[in-house]
Image 1 (cartoon, rainbow, N blue to C red):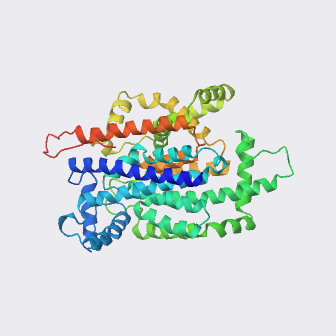
Image 2 (cartoon, rainbow, N blue to C red):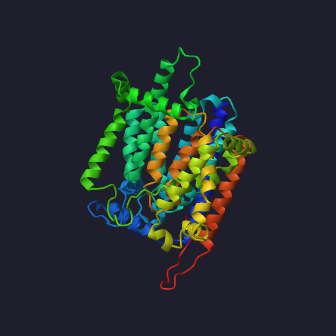
Image 3 (cartoon, rainbow, N blue to C red):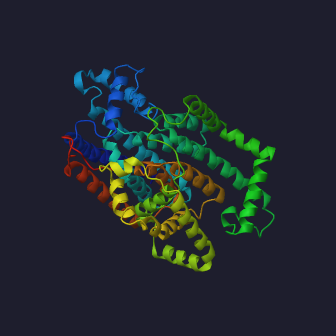
Amino acid sequence: MEKFEGYIFTALCSTNFLISCLLFSKTTREQREPYMDEIFHVPQAQKYCDGKFNEWDPMITTLPGLYLVTVGVIKPVVWLADLTGDVVCSTAMLRFINLLFNCGNLYLLYLLICKLHLREKTQTASRRILSALSLSTFPVLYFFNFLYYTDAGSTFFVLFTYLMTLYGCHKASALLAVCSVFFRQTNVIWVVFCAGTLVAGKMDEAWRVEHTKKKEEKSPSQVPLSVRGVKKVILFMLEFLTTPSHVKSVLLVTWPYAVVGVGFLAFVVLNDGIVVGDRTSHEACLNFPQLFYFFLFALFFSLPTSLCYYRVLRFLQALKKQPLFFLFLTGLFLLLVWKFTFVHKYLLADNRHFPFYVWKRLFQRHELSRFLLVPAYVFAGWNFMDSFKSRSLFWTLAFLLCLLASTVPQKLLEFRYFIIPYMMYRLHMPLPSLARLLVEFLLYSAVNAATLYIFISKTFQWPDSTATQRFMW
């Protein structure tokens, strides 16, 4: 059966690559010149192709991981194929690198699903394969496979890092973590997540050992949501983190990630910040509603796999059972929306991005619009957390802390920043049924078809420019 599954998955990878190549060809023919952020990435990569590693565009804010990998792939191909002229490191060739990352992401997603859902290994292979295929076509990520952006490579190295963590290859994971940070500095958050899952595993083990003789004690994921329950978990965590034997056991497995973390801190000190190049448009702030936007984003794209009649019923029952908690949560969300909503100048000015229209037609429709969405945030957040009810409390806390760190400091509402958090969320959900996976794949395919059609066909021009403009994520 596993051999047959391998054949099916190989055929699927080949078909996926072929279809992606056809779409890539169409997209590149329509948009031959660098577009949007490509006007910075493409010339910089071409400088690296020419061996000019000491030249840097100050407008680029990420480290040169994408360009280094590009040169490492293209140069041997150029030498073997004896290519010369304009085709070498052309915009099309540079973009093609992301199609290779797309294939790698599909394979990594499949391996991660197999590893994370071992208990369901006996179930049909079609669910694992379709789940990997569906996630690899996740619209925001899939779109940027056809442009020379950092997203495909960044996702590849984060997924690869996490896979090695799950397999216990921590030194290899740390090395891949460095690669992921070279693609995007904020990926250090997911390096912390990898280490956090190991710490959470040690905490789970210590909890079980401590309460093994108390049959009435519940697992940490079943601790009641009350002052007493929260106090109990906090005291346990404090005791764990101050016990030398526990600290030693944690350091023995997490030291490779700690080395990466120390190295990153040294970079931040020497660079006087996380951002390289232009910092004026990348200022950190406490934009708490960014987390709420992510909850709605995750709810929409996970509708086929996460939402059902019984979950809505459970939410209504939870409202009835804990009205004071949800009232407090709603008040807190209202306060955060009121006091901590930040709007980036690019969000209001650049009408080529979909978030521009989301903000204009939803949030700017009325001054109260942002407050009226709070009930939707509460439900989306509850739905998000309910998907993790089978996970350890300590693992969930590690994930939530990393989710907060990856969303809240971002001033700009940019759907690309949600790719990796969503991938992690979707990967850790219980494996959906075949029917739900099929609906999810059809939803993603429909969104991909619509966005690519709009990008290719619905062009426009600004009044003060003759350049062709296109709509995109």
